[in-house]
Length: 296
Image: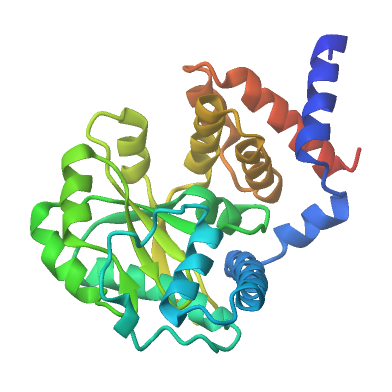
């Protein structure tokens, strides 16, 4: 390896971190659903801390206002819920709400998956949630789901997530389909959010990845859902880094490579990455993952 390439990899290591060989081995032997549980636990802890601090700061605030402050802080979006009216009467928003259970968070994910399947809406779990499933456990504040949704699905989908427990809207779904832009389904009791992403019409990679999606077990009870493949989540994360410059995408991609080192199709990844301008970055994270696997 030449000095320039070596310095690039060392610089990337400093930015996204180095995992110990023993940690990689632990992730490799961990069921995928267990990594999701860790992500749910991290979200649960963060939500409970945000709720505690907001309750202390605003002890006399109406429960519905306080809950939306918590949701907006968790999601980093101050506009969420601003278009809704009548929240003063929402019985589910209890100011003295007890701490969140990890079961509440996993139950929301299961409800979204079960609803999509019941309505026969083809879908694919993607984004950070899929990266955690295949790779390094970390906090993720939402669930990205690519959906092949059409106008006839809107009314039954809205009806499946009614107020006051859930926040979504028919108008946002129609606009989302028209503009090919994500819409949200939010569990207002926990603040967890599903970003529903209409299957892009002109994005070749997204459509190919959608056709390659795989059914995976996501909890200890044997329930299944359709996930992006491990190879495609690596590629998706490389493309996301190229677009946004955020190193979290590289950490996710490296985590999947290292955790799935003995399963993932490296030849396929190299072939596809070689057709685009993410090949150099793929080689860097590949070498970083290799060094972690070998304990260098």
